Image (cartoon, rainbow, N blue to C red):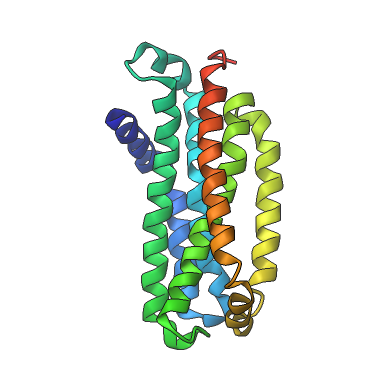
Length: 210
């Protein structure tokens, strides 16, 4: 498993410099402009889709065929992608949290707890993309799974635009959702775990190379 994770992080270093640049740009915009707080959510969401892009690179390089000769189970191969995604989502969320704490006086968060809850909600929301797209991509391949990928991106973008269209509305919206947040977060975590298990099941029965 360790070797699979190292391999994926080498892939990140080689192919994902543009993702890093986009993340830095979005966070910088949010840092210097309180009117664009929605930009801090996008890097966290992008971190959630990187494992799907890594899978596409694996298919393109035929790694998915070669790795069958290595002493790794298919469950480990799939789990490595989910673990890389979790690591990136966690790191990005921590960076975003630090930025918001530094600039908290410019935003509409009343308390530190409210700010942390907002970032935690972004982190949990970043599970949506891999939860839906990873099983489809592993079963049908990333090319065919891209249809679901674009549908989910459009849905998430629309939701974020509606949810954070005004920074002044954020506390009120958080208050209205406060009672449901534990249920929503627990549900997304459970669905993420089920997606992980489903992806392993799909990949176990998939004929490699198709």
